[in-house]
Image (cartoon, rainbow, N blue to C red):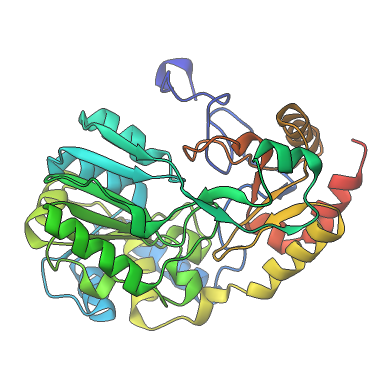
Length: 375
């Protein structure tokens, strides 16, 4: 990427996502920084290879076949769902087109919501976490002092989200990235009821619900009142280079989003992936929860402290100071192992925590060897 093509505000030093930073070498021997399923379906790969032969022709400009399959899958009437090249693109389109008076962000939360609000000129109300999440494993004296107690103060108390006003858009991620905190369907719908009473809208980011078998999803209720649901197929299919996201919600604002993103928001491969994923319930999409359990066991045996949670990631700490955690990240990168510090989620203390994703699930032993190596 040339200097003139780069976003001056997004540099490798401030990049707060998994995967390679802008300008950074993409390939590495073990990438534990992402939440991308390392078990992509052979059936899906074969289908995409077959679909590639049709890439010499324009695809359906509005992906109507895929959207119809999504409506059937989630029980939604026409006009209540949009598709585009990834959930991030859709959240930018919704915030940009929605005319919301404030974006209310209970933290921790995906950093792109703040960036999208800034670009749209929408004020942000950040709600700091008010709950304590339990630790597993040995709690070092440093962690106990740093976080002022025996638990991690990164929990969202959904029942205490208050002070909402007409025109607000409240964003709730379920399960929460990076803690794995999960809210029941009843809790989410109660928050929606309270938002409605205040004249506010609710966006539930369900990017990781597929990993939970949709057990606490509310997408079937999207569009009732001002309830929006965001979904990502990028992570669960294990193909981040074929980007598909879905936004379900009320007919009028979803229609504005579709107008804003325009035709051909999904290419030939993306439409093929969408159809495959919506045609039938794919049991776990190849995801194996026992891989996460092996990683947790390895970390605990190595003296790490782990925050148990749901979803395709593990939030853990080696119990060291921020500068030592940064040094550990840099040492492992020199060995070809990419880690992600949990900064960028809007909560203090992320520089002492690592969010470990699928690369670590796929090969926990290799990660363990790298951690023990003096570098």
